[in-house]
Image (tube, rainbow over all chains, first blue to last red; front, side, top):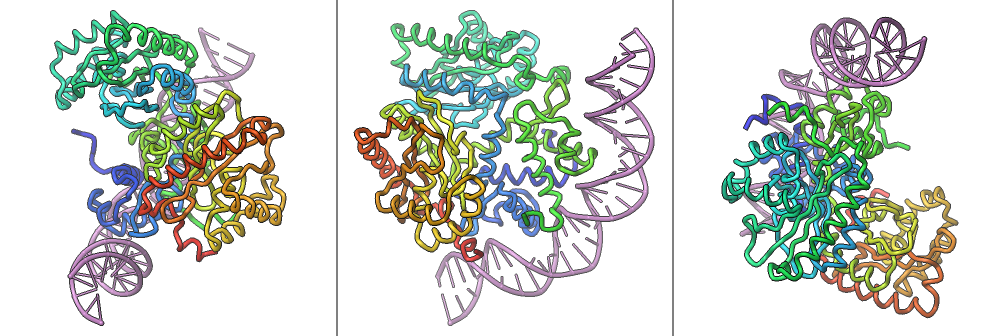
Length: 270
Length: 270
DNA sequence: ATCAAAATTCCGTTATATGGAATTATTACG
DNA sequence: CGTAATAATTCCATATAACGGAATTTTGAT
C-alpha cells in the first residue's frame, strides 16, 4: 500500500524496469510497452534499457527490437552463491530424493514472510503447484513446504508472520485463521505437512522443514505428486526419507550465516 | 581494454556494484570494500546499496553490516536464464543422460562469443572443467560442448567468432589457430567433439551440438568423465545416446525465438 | 508503395547523484 | 573496561547526468 513513498531514485526506477522486463519473459517486450508499464517516457526508458544492455543485464532480441533480461543476470546470480550456498548444498539431496521417490522435488528457502523456490527437480508426473517455478514466491503458510517452515518458527516470530500473512492468504483462496492455526499445531507436532491446503484436486504433497543448528527452520524440502501416491502404505516411508535428507542438510548449514535468518529489526517493526 | 569509454551513466555504475557484490559471494562485502572496488565514494555507494536493498536486489547481513546480493536478484535471474525456456525444456534430457551414462552432464547455451553453462547434473566422479559451475562462461572453442557449437556455426559467423576468440583462447592456454581450425573441421565432419583441448589429464569429455529447426547450433549437451570411460568400446554408444537427446531437444526448440540466435548487427561490426 | 506507429536521437531544463565533511556506530586493542 | 581507530551513516552545496518533448529514422502493415 505504501511502498512508493514519494519519489524513487533513478536507480530504483531502473530496477523497476528489470522487474517489468522479467514479466515479459523470454519473448521480450517492446520499448513502448516497457515505457507504458513503467510510467516513464520512451526516451528515458530507451536510454536506461541501452545502459542495461551494454552491461549485459538486458538483451535485445534481433528481430522485433524487443528487449528481455540478459544471460549475464543469470550468470551473476549463479556465481553469487545464493542464500549461503544453500542451493548448491542441497542439490545432491534433491537428486537423491528425485531418484528415490520418483516425484517432483522442491527446495524452498524462507525469505521474510515468504518462501522462495530455490530449486526444483521434475518427476515423471507433471506438477502444477503454487511453488511453481524456480524463483517462485509464496506466502508462509501456503503449500506444504511453506507450512512446514511456518509451523516450526519460534512462537513470537510465527505470530508476527501469521498476523502479516492472514490477509494475503485470504486473497489466495485460503480458508481462515483458525484452520491455519489448527494446521500449524498438527504440522509442528508431527514434524511434516501433507495437508491439502487449497490444492489442485488429485494432487498431494509433503513438506518437511530444514532446521539449522540454532533450531531455526530456514528452508524446506517438499514433494508434489499424485494424491494416490501418498496413501497410508507409502507415506511413512516417504516421510522418513525426506526427514533424513532434511536433517542432514540442516546440520550442514552454516549457523553463522545470518542471511538465512530473520533480521530481528524487522520483527520489532510489527 | 576499451570497455570504459569515458563516463558511464549512473545506472551503469550502479550495475557495476551488482557485479562487485556478486564477487563477494554469500559472505557479503563491507561497504568500504565495495566503495574501493567501485572507485566511488562511500557516500555514493552507501546510497546506491540502500536503494538496491529496498528493492530487494541486495540484502544486508544482520551481523557485520555486510552486503550481498538478495533473493530478489536470484528470483529475477531465474527468469533471465531461461533463454526461451531452454533450461526447463532440457532438464528431462539431462536427467535421462545422467541416469543412463552415470557421468556429469552439462547444458551449454550460446551467448555471443561464449557459451554459458545453463545447467549441470553431477555424476559420481567429481569433475573440474572449464565449463565449471552453472553460470560459468567460456569462449566458443574451449571445451567439447563449446567446440561443438562453434564448429556447426555457418561459415561467416564462425569466422567472425574465430577472429574474435583466438586471442582470448591463447590467454587460456590454447594452442594456436591452425590447431583450432583443424579441430573444427573434424568436429563438424563427425558431429561431435571429444578432443582434449587443453584439459585436465585423465579427464575427457564429449560434446554434441543442439541444432534448432533453422540449422543453427544454439546450445550443446556435453559430459565430462574419466578418460578411461570414453574408450573405443563405450564411446560410440555414448555418442549415439547424446546425439539422440540433442536431436530431440533441437526439434523442440522454438525456431522463432530469435534470442537464441546471433544478432547480425554485431557480426557486421567485426 | 504508402502510411502509421514504433524506435532512436537530440537538446535545453531540472531533478538528483555526487563526494567532502560531520556524526554516529562498531571494532580492535591496551 | 575504556579508549582509539576504523567503518557506517547522514548532511549538504554543487556539478552532473537524467528527464521528457520534439525531431528523425526505422519498422511494420496494408
